[in-house]
Image (cartoon, rainbow, N blue to C red; front, side):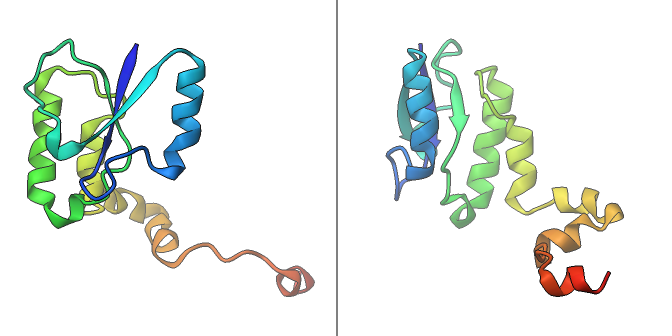
Length: 123
């Protein structure tokens, strides 16, 4: 079996962060082929290799094209291991709106501060 890691034009190979996953898949007999997302035809053969959205880091340079590509993937019937709808929501961080009611969006923007000794001493 083979899977496609969708990458980007400026880093078309398997990213260093993805090497452990690619290695684990290889150990299972699954080959990984990195291809920039701009070169993957969503309307290609339906029984083509499954796609894993990985290092599509240049999407912010052409968000409309990326959103259209994700929608075309969704509509094509091709196997995509991580849902294109979630990636679409992540383009402009729409998913944060759904988290605001729990105040999680603020935490995401500001980061969570680790509790140090001073914080423990105030208890």
